Image 1 (cartoon, rainbow, N blue to C red):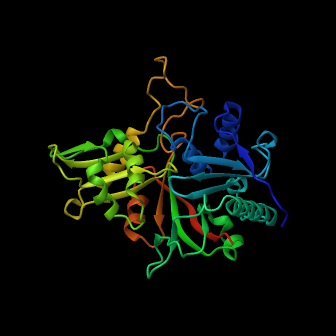
Image 2: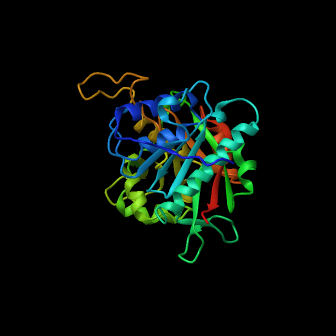
Image 3: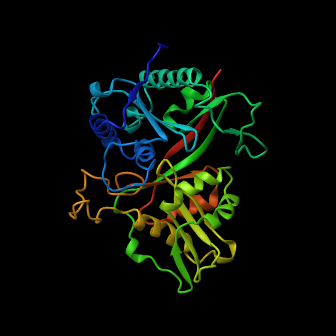
Length: 339
């Protein structure tokens, strides 16, 4: 392997920002977690524009201005301080067939460059989670545990070439909802329930239903892009909810056991899709946002996506039957030791 120097992308620069969007957009849905991780790092306003992204950094494996999105082999990365995770995309992910050895080497070189970055800036990029316990689920990393980085949602094409380098890998199935594929006009809500967002008073309950230990502060950042169903009345306790994670994917879907088999999970997802549809929202000047030039909502570019733990039969059956939803590929949350 050769030494690779990652090329920092200046998200405050409109030329850099626009170029990054331009080289990633043709590769949707494979590049969505990079686009979504940028766009969901701050409150969405509808416009695809540069600006301050205090919780997100971005790099490419080649100089940004030299990349031909249609033909070049390249990687793009982001790091989210909200989740303490890197996200990796390689342009070869959108090509048909297995990975070539050339593409595998490029991904391996990119990962080694990430580790070099983590060593130089330790502990800034250290993960907060490890995989441990009887279930192999994520757990909070202790100070005595060795430093490692998390490369989130690594495409299945790179599973084999990164296996020997990884301390652990955690598999999920990626489901995608293409723009316009979900009919939100069919949303039905029982008369005794109302739609709201997740509130601060709900967070301990929401945290308690997730197998991933996220801090309260994280859920507070996601409240504005969440949907929660509760009985009518200000004191109504949350009974069903979902939110958009910091990478743009829909997650944390839950329905209280007493309210299941009433279609509320479908209702929550459709209400969230409807809430995040910007395509008909007016622009800053009162005109309609132009599809293709602006952010039409969703996790990114009007798309939605969800990650389901491999082996979670209930969630798999739900998304397999959800209108417009299709199963894409396997992702691996990849934990790699820094030293």
